[in-house]
Amino acid sequence: MDRSGERDTTAGTGARQVLFVQGGGAGTHDEWDNVLVDSLRTGLGPGHEVRYPRMPQEDDPSYPRWSAAIWRELADLDEGAVVAGHSVGGTILVQALAERPPERRLAAIVLIAAPFVGQGGWPGDDFEFSGDLGDRLPPGVPVHVFHGAQDATAPPTHAELYADAIPRAQVHVLSGRDHQLNGDLSEVAHAIRGHLVPDGTRS
Image (cartoon, rainbow, N blue to C red; front, side, top):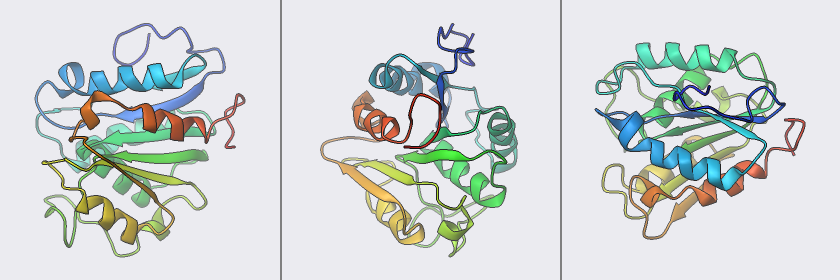
């Protein structure tokens, strides 16, 4: 079974792993971001295991609770996995990686419609990004930032803030897409496939 309660036939077969951290809000795991995960699984195709854990108290995201859950998930990944986060899940994911890099090497970090917390972005209750965010992330790991040009929740200027804070980041602003990228993660899947090869190492 995968962490969403659905059977994943690729698990335990040497599948290339992707950890997807949901966004915040009541019902998000089962009613909103599950659509993104389904799209990602379709785009990646066979041979990939997309892990989709339920974050604690999804209607009230907090850095202490969610980062602890993320670190537990990271500890359970194989070498060369990709980590991705949507909305506030991406925001907390990148801060958690900056605060405590995982022991195993990652193939890529993918942020999807993630609000930037700090100067120019959202004010932070639990944290704000430091000026050396890019330097604090795991060295040598590619970073992708995907954002919808029509995102009314976190405007696309947030993607530009990530580009400034993480110089290595590749920013993809997608025309006509909203905060949920219109339920279509085909471009995200394409980027992830570019960093994974069958043995789980980075291409």
